[in-house]
Length: 127
Image (cartoon, rainbow, N blue to C red; front, side, top):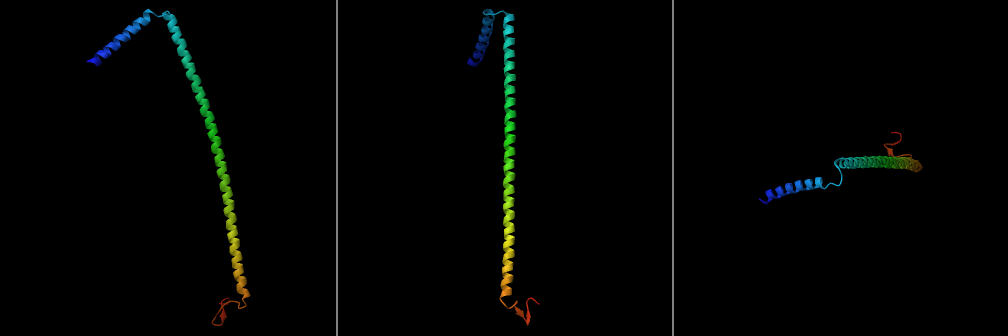
């Protein structure tokens, strides 16, 4: 029962507050309407300004993020290029080491004086 009575008291208090506001209003109706219109205009201007500031902020942050992404992309490209060059140099060094090792083996085989191993009276080079 208190809930029903509480809502009724709320409505009664609301009605009394509206009536008191009308009776003791410091301004005329026209002045009050003009004041409300002015305040609504100020509120609209405030919201427009805040929205413009938000838009400007987002544009600035977007530009900053694009620049950061571009910088990171360039750093990545540079790093990949350096690593590619390093890898190519390592491959070339490996090829040269292989060539040198094969040359050393051939020189050692030629320098041993046998000219190769024999198989049934023939050298391995002539088979």
